Image 1: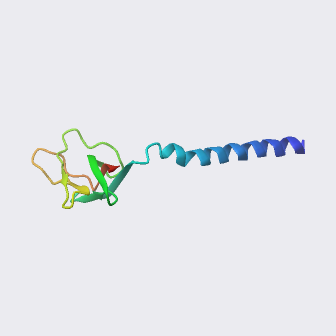
Image 2: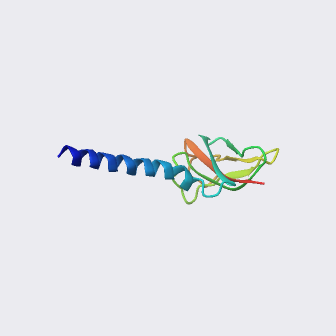
Image 3: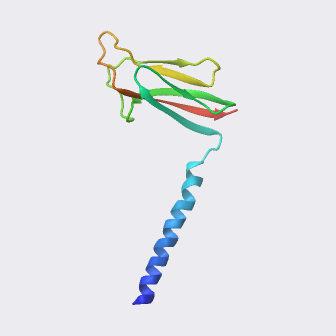
Length: 111
């Protein structure tokens, strides 16, 4: 009985170690692409890529990552230096009030 318990414990530990070891390898499928998310006030956030990387594919969500209301107006644009984007939501006419926080996510590509 003791041997069986040790064996099961040993198999469980081995499986857990295999998952942990595979995690970073799976996450780094393309080492030349990285996602950066900045969360902050709807008054404005800035997401920057590491030095030498090119930003692209910006999108804004609520601070918790959920989609904005369908009629929510927002704005984003490149920042000086070209290494990221700034995004914000103002109280626009015919748009819901801005959420308390927003998340700006960009994709960074190594040049």
